[in-house]
Image (cartoon, rainbow over all chains, first blue to last red; front, side):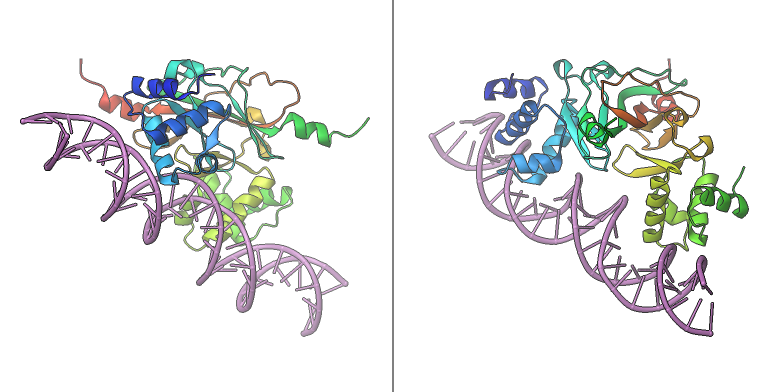
Length: 146
Length: 146
DNA sequence: TGGATTTTTGCAACTTGATTGCAAATAACT
DNA sequence: AGTTATTTGCAATCAAGTTGCAAAAATCCA
């Protein structure tokens, strides 16, 4: 559970990112939350940091492949720290599941994204696999008793 | 190439959607364009229809599984008519490719989306497979001569 | 150390995509 | 035709995200 100041600053520096107070706050918040977060959610968690600073930080992290982004199912972008030592290789990614009932986004970390065979000429940088439907909680609640 | 008035109205009626003039315009525009369109793009194509009407129509079509939606890689939602007789089964879907250089979205209609094994309890309604990288046009342009 | 330079930050304003309230227009139903 | 329900256009609004800019903080270097 590497989420203390020292470790965070190391992670940033390794990527050539100056570890300012705000950036460490953003990084640590994402490290602690074991799910994808939106700009708005980070804004709520980090009351002391302005949303423009969070936005700039997220974009900086994105450019440096410290995190990847995905659409959350309702048009909002969510961010998630890359797993494998700060690289964003396709193998490190996992599918996401958006519940159309409770509107939550799930990380399916146990599931591996199968890579498709691309037509010639396409260079793949990242893959996003998003499944939509009803999550276990909601499908259980709506299940009619037999 | 079923994009005349009569056929369109039939498609809508089969779904229980009243085929008004605007709705047929939206439907036919999507049928003719063989790619995913955003609300904004439809607005440009259909000069006579207000964007609020287009928006309401798209949501109506979505609810009735006449089309499916995906994020286009830059936070804008794009819509695409379902293939298989107006159902949105997972088999009918194809991956999309977003070029990070020219910012275009490609439909990889020749590629089949592999379905992953879901953990227990998840009910799957739809799947979105989005690949990001460099498209053939751009990767060709940037390729250094040997 | 101290002063100049660069980087980062917060605030407010703005941009953009999309939705909503409402009254007018259109269509549907006896 | 007259009544009711549905759809539409317009303007206003909302929300996510970005940007310009001046102040604050960090860095550089003689």
